Each structure stands twice: as C-alpha cells, then as structure tokens.
Image (cartoon, rainbow, N blue to C red):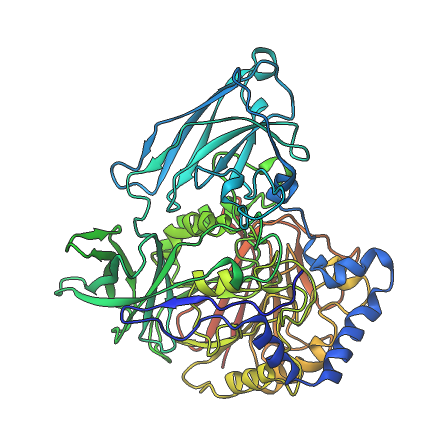
Length: 628
C-alpha cells in the first residue's frame, strides 16, 4: 500500500465549496502522533502478548474476534480476467428500461446460452455498463493493463438455472437498485479464480438514474434537530437539493441541503482504490430544526433543476424525539454486525451475512413499536467494495426513512494499516472510515473521531469509537468522562454506554481464549468510569452472538444498581462466533443465534431490556432494572 498523503474529499454546499470533510492520511497520522508514543507501544504489546500462538495472531489484530469471513466479491480475481468474446455465446437482459413509474428497485430477467456449459460459469452485474479496460485508471499510459478493473456489484452462477448443465441455456432473475449509472451483465467462464468474459448483455437503465433515493434520518447535535441524508446523481452545478417538510396539517417549509462526495484518492488502500472503487454519487444532508417533541412530521427530498423542474423523492414521515428528561414511552433498538444480503440470492453460496435480511425484516415488522435504532459498528461489510454501500442503504431504507438510525464505528468501517486507526488490521478494505462518515450523518465533533453524546428523553447515550484510542489520558477518554458525568440523573435516569468492540465483558471464544474476556486493557481503563458514573447498561457488537452479564464490577456480580450490565448484541446478520466451552460466573445468558436488543422505558423507575431473535421476532431473554 502507498503511504503518500491522500488528497482530500470534495465537500460541496449550496453556496460554494466548503471546508473538506475527511482529513488526509498525513493529517490523521499527525493527530495520532500527538498521543503518547509510549502508549501506542504499550497498547500493541498488550494486544499481541496474549496472542503468541501463531494461530491467533491474525485473529487478535485482524478483527478475528468476529470470526473474520471472506467477502464474496473478493473471491473474484477480476484483475486477472481475460476477454475472449465468443460469437456463439449470448446474454440478454429484460426489461431494458427500469423504474418507469418511479421505482427505486426492479427485477431483471437475464437469459443466456453457451456452446458448452461448465459448473464454473457465472453472470456478473456491472455498472456502469461499459466495464472494459478503457475505463481503468491510467489506461492511456504505456504498457498493457488489466482487461477489466472493476468488480461486479453481484453475481450468480449459471447452474442456479435449472437444467443449465445439460442444455447450456438458462435464465436467472436479478434485483437491481437505482445506483446512478446504467447496467450490463457479463457472462464468464473459468470460475471466480480464472474468469474469462465470453459475452456481454445489452445495456439497461433506470428511467432517472440520478433520482434522489434512500433517505436516512439521524438526530442532530441537539435533541430538537433531525437530519435527513440521501443519495443522488445530481451535483450542485445541476440542481439545488432540499427537503420539503412540516408538521402534519401545517404549511410546508424548505430546508436547503449540503452536498458531499469523495474520490478514489480519498481512500487509503485496496480494494477500495482499485477493483472495489465505484463512484459514490452525491450525498446530501439537510437539517430540520426546532422540532416540537414527539410530534409527527412529514418530509420529502427533492432537487430543483436549473429549468425550475423539481425531481421528488417519495413522501415520508417521522416522529420528533422527546426532549431531555421527558417521561413518555421510549423504545430503543440496538444491534451490531448486520451487513447486507441479496433478496435475489446472489453471492450467498458462502453465507457471508446469512441473517442480515432476517434482522432487517424483523425490524421493519416492529417499526411501529420502535423510536430509534443504534447500529453499533460493522455496518455494511462493504470491505472496500463501494457498490455495497448503496446496496446496504437501499436494504435498510424502510427503517432509516422513518426513525433515526444512529451509528457506531467498527473495524470493518475504519481499520487499515498506517491510517490512524488504533488497530492495524485491514478489515475496512482501504475505506478507512470515509464511506461510513459520508453516507450516514453522525453528531460527532470531528468526522474521523466517531464518538458522540446523545440525549433522548430519559436516556443519555455515550457512544465510543473503539477503533480509536480510548485509554486514560486520551482525547476520547476525556470525552467519555464528560459524557457520562455531565448528565442530570434526576431528569435522565438511564445511562447507556455503547462501543463496537467489547470493552467490557464477553466470553466469545477469541476473547476468552487468552483470559482477557474483552479487548486487552479495556476494563483497566474504563471500568472505573462506569463505576464512578453508575452506568446502567453497556452494549457491544463485534462478537457475532448474544450474551448478557449480571450487574458486574471487577468480574464480581453485584446487586442491581451497583454494577453495569454488559450486553453483546453482535448477531445482527454476519456469520456466527463461538463461545468458550464454559461460561464465566458473570455470564448470565448466552445464545449463539441472530438477533437484536430492545430497551423500553416509560418512567424513571424501571428500564426493560429484551433480546429478540431475528428469525421470529420473539423474546428469548429479558431483564428489568429498577430505581427506588
């Protein structure tokens, strides 16, 4: 990987270009150097010392606690692909025009034939439709380059079509989403490791590929501000982005949106800068201010073209949050490590995120009983294949367009060597947090420092960034101390700590194997804070399972109110992780299954928690915290 400074991301506004959004790698390194070098050395020593068995080295440094899997698109050796078009092979896609009634998704039938069938034949979806070597960076330089330099968005093997191996003809159905460009389908032989392109389909396209799509809500930096973020193909030179909104029954107003994008050079490694790159389009964010607590609002995203025409998104609505200290029914869903899946069955033969759709659908079914959602890291699992961020935003849009969808940063968003992240793994695939920071609004003070505080009625949430240093003496530790210590517990009785990696307690196999049962040095650094500020519950992802502790301090179970309950809710959808053979004394309930957590509070006297399985939405574990 090149370690030269990366050029900055491009941030656009309705008036003019504004300050940059993403710091360069050089700036991130400079910020990192302000921390104690000895602490960095101590951390790495502590992180490696328990992991001396060679089997565990990769797990300790590379996100192994989450049962690190293989991204389906990384299995395709697209940079070694050959082009050998065969006149007797053919592939055709229908219909050619998609979304003629404003739909954002469409089903496409792909028909194909070849003289001789093979089990390794496959069909890939490419966008833009022209994906030959002429579009590769530097393709006009000297020397031969790759024949194809971009990975497909997804793929299916042709033998998914019944009878293909005998007839050498078949048909498959793909679900496409509006991703700002046209599409074509490539027919490959040779399997994933030695792909040869033998036929290319006709071009297909959405009626308006630039249309505004996939709105996502998030709370702003104050309780009475809601942000609306969405994606489109319209730059500020073409159209003015805005949100039309208002309380139901009132006259609507317009809130102008800022616009941001980023280029390949803003990313820090492979495959994000090479075969995984895809233009992210333009991401717009508007701020809806001075909301009345718990009132219903409607909104609609739009772009006013230079000729005066307005291109509208679909009408949506949301309920404003409660004010800090307000006593009302407040329901909070929390989970991690969900990723995305394909409803058409693409990419699923290796089960990378087998329960992602189950969790998504379970949340959609219960949306009328949900007020806010926290997805606490390992969000899309794009891992440097940027097309997957669009796929993820479309999958969760029924949720994000109706309730605030808050994020925490995980290893699959942030980690990459020499990029300023605390851990030196490659789990982000060279993204280094840039897509996550851009695609979703988070009320942080600094975009790359993914920690923040949030008040929601009777709750105070302190969200940590486990991928940056959290130990005593660091900027993040000081923030956490302020966040946990500044809340008025008479008004906001329920104090919740959130992080992606397990900074508290877990008997997941990789944490339990060396006896730390958490990230090394985590409890030594943070448990005093939780005790001093009387944190009620701490939530984590990273380990793909569910586990709950007793109220615990220094590995001892204590009476209610005298310790923090630690809950791992990392079973959002990615492949499951194992537990240690024996449960530690502080582990009350363990389940190796997919699911999510739900907090419910209606007054200052009791807080209920439920663990629900994604498969059926039923409650399999619960507890209640009580106040006198």
